Structure formats: structure tokens, C-alpha cells
Image (cartoon, rainbow over all chains, first blue to last red; front, side, top):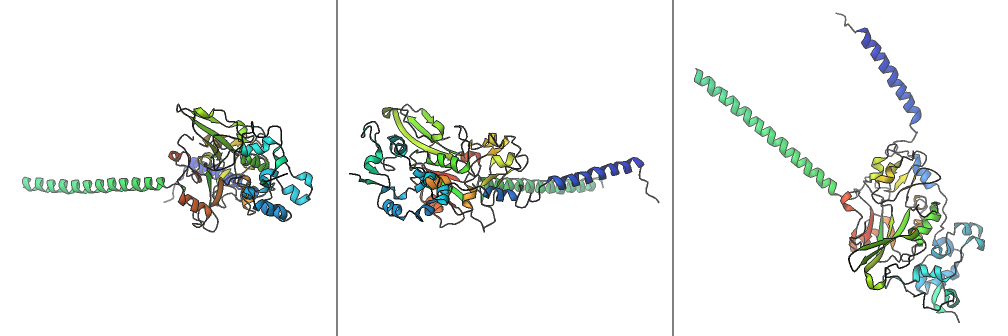
Length: 154
Length: 262
């Protein structure tokens, strides 16, 4: 007995086949190569995210040239503070060795970012100074060496 | 004759009833057991992924050490070329002040980059503290779940990243993040957020905010390595994540977190 397939079903199957293959072809071109390599995302995006240039060189890069500062810093309370905390991003300076490419902040406001009085600062976390009373009109670095704050300048 | 038939019928009914009760009890038991298992799974915070060859990063912020100097927020902007306008931040600092009358005052002028002026006089303050905020790098993060195109994902190292080439800028993730850590980059027009300085981690450098923190209030490390400084810190201190009720699996742990912090 021959199986009877109605012609409308054949046409429907044909339409389905065309649409499904069209979908598969489109999908092949639209889904990026590395999509799904590790999960539901483009695997190559991990490489993209690792690409950007660094701006902060890290303390070790500073100490390769500035060993004197390293020794000086080690003797006082600022020993744990990394160079780029105050001097700003240093990668450009590491590459060019130009002194213009590094910040040398001065001024009471800058030191005050850490050392100004504020009730939210833990008493033992940082030494706090009342900037409204302490040697008004003078710059902090006139008396204090920022690398060795308790070695007072004469 | 009729009596025996009815007895047989009774037997049949009895056995089918027994069968029904048995299968119903099994089904109920299985359902209860399954739901219990499932809920206990849900209770696990920060479920660790299986690939053990890579580190799995976690972060600790010690509120007792933060002095609100703003170095982290400033360094983050410089390192990651975040727009300088005061409403785009990958990390920022908030000052919480609990007053004697119980009200809470929260300020974050320019994300704390220019430091903090004490706005409440000393005599009104019950307690005051700084809370640095950044991406919590959740292991079950809502922002990843809502992305319609798979442009944001949890990297194998447990860092939540964005695929800038694939992001369509639909802002779903921005409103899904319960910590407010995402924004739309005004130039690129795609989502942007803390990457835990993924490009630095890959070069064995600390994230910029942790490089510059003068008091060591921020710490990152490998949660898988039970000997790491981070895991030791977590063992020795009472830490808490933000909004644990949302079950985001946050991997940013705060030491000495006060209940006022939202």
C-alpha cells in the first residue's frame, strides 16, 4: 500500500526546510567565532578586556631607579604608601624618564585629603591635623619631608 | 455468588487505594526532598566554579581602615579612562554619618575624589564612617542574567566583564545591578563597569585602586587558595556582603559593615 502524503503537507515541509536552512545559514554568519567557547559570551572578549594599556606602573617599577627614596621611605610612617598614591600614574614616566611626566603635588589641600580632621576617620588609621589651626599659610612640605614626614626640615 | 463478587471488588478497590496512597506519598516525599535540596543549594553564597587551574578572585574592603582620601576613585578614573564628569564612577566612596537622633546622613561629593568635608558637627554625630563602593563581582549576578545578547559575563576568574563590541547599550544591566555599579559610557554608548582592572591582573599587577590605597583598606586575592592573605583575613574577621538577601553571590566582603549601609 502506497502511503498517501497530501500535497499541502509536502509544500509545508518544503517551506519549513527553506526557512530552517536560511536560519542556520544566517546564524552561521551572525554568531561570532568564539561565542560559546567558555560560556554564553564571546571568548575573544577576554583577550579584548586584557588589552588596554596600563597607566599605573606599580611600586616595583619605581624602585628600580629610585632606590634612595625606597630606603628613605622605609624608615618612616609613609613606608606602606605606594609612590603612585601621591605621584599619580607613572607608566608614562617609567617609559620616558622625563620628570614632566610625573606629578609632584604640593599644597595643604593635597596632604589634607588624608590628614584633615574628619569624624569618619578612625583615630589610629591616620594622623589627623586641624588644617584651620595648624601653621596657617604655610605649605606642609616646608617643614615635613613627604617621604619621611617625622624628619622635620630645619 | 453475588457476595463473592462484591468481596473481590472490595479487594480490588482496597489494593488500588493502597497503590494510590503509596505513589502519592512517594511523590509528596520526593517533592519535599527536592525542594529542600534546592533551597539548601540556593543558600550557598558565591558558588565556586569548577575550573581550578585559574584563580577565583574575591575582594575585601576594610571599613575601619578607609580614611576617605579618594585616591582609589581618582586612580580608577585615570587607569580606565572613565569620563571625568562627576556621575560616572567605577568605584566611589560614601560617607555615612549616623546622628544622635538616629537619622542617617549619606554624602559622596564627586565620588569622594576631592576628599570629604565634615558636614555634620561633632556634637551631633553618633558614629561616622566611609564606605568605598565598587562592583561586587557577583557569582550569580543579576546584570549577567538580564543581558539579552550575552555581552556581559562572569570570566573564568570570577570577574564580571563587558564585551564592548557586542553590547547593544540597552541599559538592562544598569537597572538590574542592585549596587548601582554600572553606567552607560557617554562616548562609547555601551555599558561600563569595574573590571577589577582585568588588564592589570593579567600582567600580575594589583588593580589601580588597591595599588594606590594608602591604608591598605582594599584587598583582592584568590578565594580558592586557602593560604592566601584574603582567605586568612576572611577567617579572622567578621565580614558581610552588601544586600545578602538578594542572593547575588557577591564576592566583595566588607569588614565592620554597619547595618545602615545600603
